[in-house]
Length: 205
Image 1 (cartoon, rainbow, N blue to C red):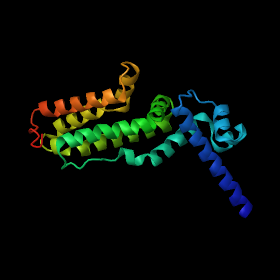
Image 2 (cartoon, rainbow, N blue to C red):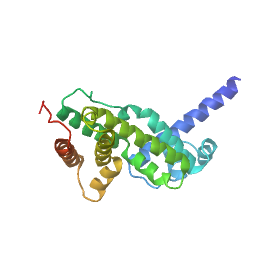
Image 3 (spheres, rainbow, N blue to C red):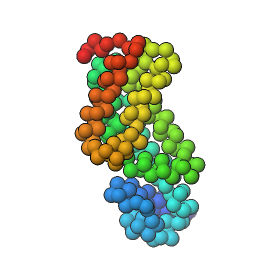
Image 4 (cartoon, rainbow, N blue to C red):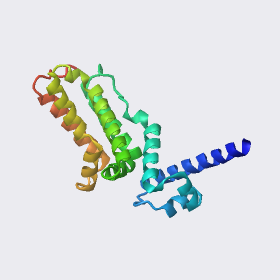
């Protein structure tokens, strides 16, 4: 039994080493991933990679699952709904940029692979739902002043504006820095809330 447990422990360590290699290589722009690069970075053999995963698709899915466990706190609300509006807007933008700094490339790969790999598609859908819930929590005060349909529209607009996809466009197509993106997102959200029919002015502004 100890020998079997030892093998299981070594296999688990090897699996995590490969997943850590996925994160490191993606952050460093090493895309597309190859089994050889992963094995070298993880310090394991190519055959060990294949023993732990059923190919690159399965490895990327498991890496995304581990990512969601490790970074789950970055999807949580960070500002109480009772906080002043300006503070909630600022914290919302900061939380999105913090998530994207930590895991933007992983999210990008997951979105691309989700187009033709159902398990990743489901994971991406859950992450999008979590981000929408975060937005809904941050702006619950304003949403409460609206009809359910209009509140949903408000949440959808702010969530889409500060989505990982929008961040990709601003960085890749428009060459915006994260500082510039933060400024633009903050101004845009404040303008949306100030001009949305039915939302009362922020008394703390």
